[in-house]
Image 1 (cartoon, one colour):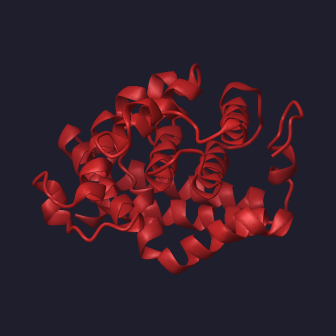
Image 2 (cartoon, helix red, strand yellow):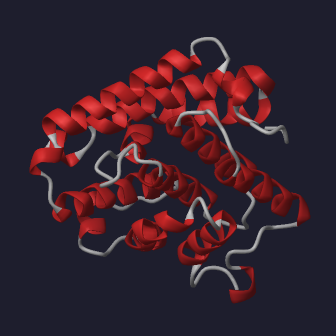
Length: 242
């Protein structure tokens, strides 16, 4: 990313990106409207968050099952992911106002009991702090980028940049879901992007490496992957998948 007035402008212009994100948004809107929103209730949101917590934990290295997560059990990573999912939606209103505080809170919740208290919510070093400030500017500054693309960039920046001492993947995927909620793509948090990333795990992990190491080509490749994943995340919703 760069520090221009709209740091995402160049990304929107990459070949195929605009159309991929428009198609992904259309698919999400259609699925939620036609197959979900008229018959949803808070329990469906809870189920979506549970499925997302489990998938995110597995991507972070957990061996716990969905049944264990549903019962509040499982290993440390699963417990951390479940704690994050429990607090997640309450942080949505603050994401565009005080994003650095949201980042810190997500990490503090995820890493509680694992890291020393003074390391909770704190970036690893000054370079990591600078990266987080740059990420925060994407959320507070003007941009013409669609919300899904913003979610994809935040996810990749935190997951590949690893600004915290631990649990960066959990924080990155939580931020992704928060962007979808706070920017009106999925206000009730019914889609499960984390489950899509798990279903597409080889591509997910390779595309994150591409984002980190591949320059513009790697960023381009990640963005196209993420658009596919968001469409798949709608299909993983409890209102669709049962």
